[in-house]
Amino acid sequence: MKTVLCYGDSLTWGYDAAGPGRHRFEDRWPSVVDERLGKRGRVIAEGLNGRTTAYDDHLSPADRNGARLLPTILATHEPVDVLVIALGSNDLKKHTGGGRAAEAAFGIERLVQIARSYPSSFGFRIGEILVVSPPALVATADPDFDAMFGHALEESKRFKDAYARVAKATGCRHLAASDHCVATPLDGVHLDAANTRSLGDAIAQTLIPLI
Image 1: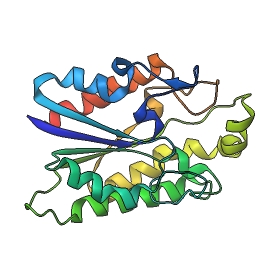
Image 2: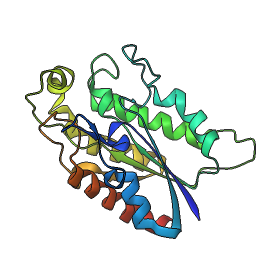
Image 3: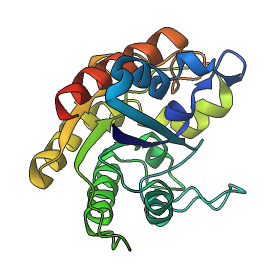
């Protein structure tokens, strides 16, 4: 059985804007992937609210820098046969990644480098890497989320092309979440249960040939 590690942010964690809270376990996209893969794969969900690709967030009580944390996560769960990296939305905050999709793409490239060069004590190597570009942001009346992300609505539409270029350059697989789900206007960033399940279905279909 192959091990699939899903490394992401609040969309991987299952943030439910309607609560606010957390989606039911079975509605979170890693759970959907696990269900679809069946006995072919063991899916590990490593989602953290606010996680960036490679940037610090000094407003958070937890370390949200994905590049700094990835080696520890890889060591915790090795051997990892397939790594799914689903990060980038939080890089659009001006106090983290700077507000551009380009910074998120640079961060994704760095995460791929870290994963492929990780010095496993047991000689394990990452198999396939799938990068998932985030869904585009949508307008929201929520004042806090609008303050954090409202400036980046158009910029978020550049995720798909930016990640596709990184995937091609690094030999990774790429799936554009924007092709399969739409963010909820409740906060403009997160997915409702139906859309997070739709994302899980799409990721599962991409992974099945790899395992």
